[in-house]
Length: 102
Image (cartoon, rainbow, N blue to C red; front, top):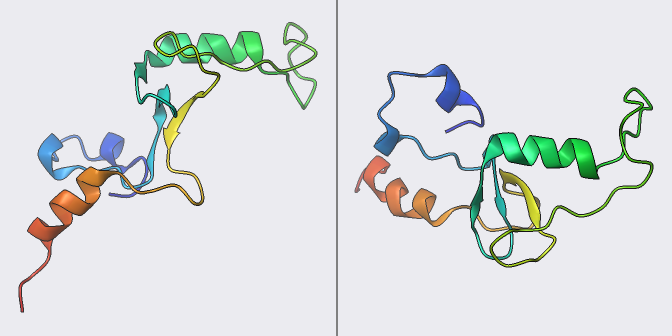
């Protein structure tokens, strides 16, 4: 599944949808995997991350980490797969269903 395609294909059954590269519309902890409410995450970004473009006068001058409420580690981010990280296990589990046996 291409990133964001899940939002465009509303009729696609959820069991057929595997966001291989994650989703920018979800957030979770990199350390413990705990999901984070996305609206709360967006609020945390506004409070903790500096505005490098200088557009938001209320943004902090320095960034500070967004800490996970479950494990207390500063590893909360959008649920995307970054370079060098593993693809979700669901991708490998479901890929067998999509491959033809030759």
